[in-house]
Length: 340
Image 1 (cartoon, one colour):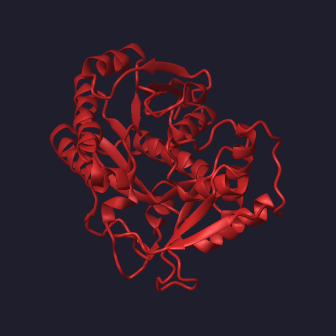
Image 2 (image 1 turned 45 degrees about the vertical axis):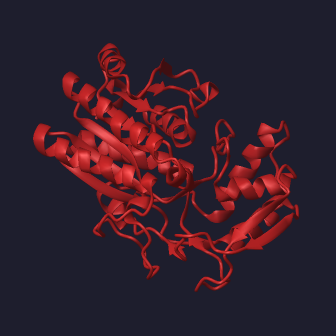
Image 3 (image 1 turned 30 degrees about the vertical axis):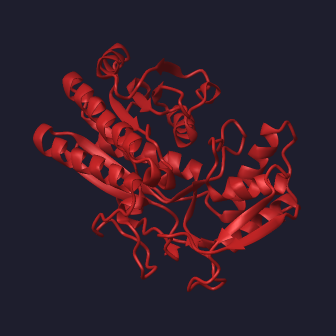
């Protein structure tokens, strides 16, 4: 496949995972075009890539963008992502994540573009009690509005594929983490809610303490276990999915987990930040949060088999080191870590 002739619209490409994927697309020979409204994304994370500022809900602008840039395929990241916030304020999640995606699908249908990689989530599975690795054959049973919105979009893709020949891959990933090793881009949400950057804030002294929610789970150290995947591995997963759509030309929607199959507990991650940073910080233990399962780990064998993809950079030490160095660079400090 001649990727140099393939133009890819990256919707939400100025965000955390989108910016890393934009870099990966360029390195793979694609021509990415970033489409973003910058409500959470960052202009400096576009790296000189062709940029179109617009709303996901703006069907006409999407149509003109797809035509003007001769787009061959789309990767869709644009979404509100905080599960807790979706519980207390669900309507913006349904408007942005579901209703606005209709505009994208309508624009793609009008312009005859059939290939779509969709940023989904492990939250579509809900909370399963047995702790076994989750596979794509499990039913979708989300427990919060955020998970429901992603599941609803997958349903929309299924119907569109059946009726109009859409070719789509939904990538359900677990705990995105880490940063570009060259510190070109990284995680900078406002407010920040993800564990690793929160721990790093405690190590940097910009957060008073890190909180552990629940220490009595049925896990080796009593804290929750999660599957952390390096954002660069997620980026290459999106490139692999896009390659697959171009190479197979199969209508329909397929879903794949992106993860490592290995989990790390909250205490393990805290200890790794201490080792990499060489700094100590306060840790507070609080009660469980409602709805937090003890273990969430991915079975990514489908992506390994069908997409030729495998996580290569997702050791927890590398994830933390890259995130730590990015945080230092954001403060104007040189890259360094004490961990080996």
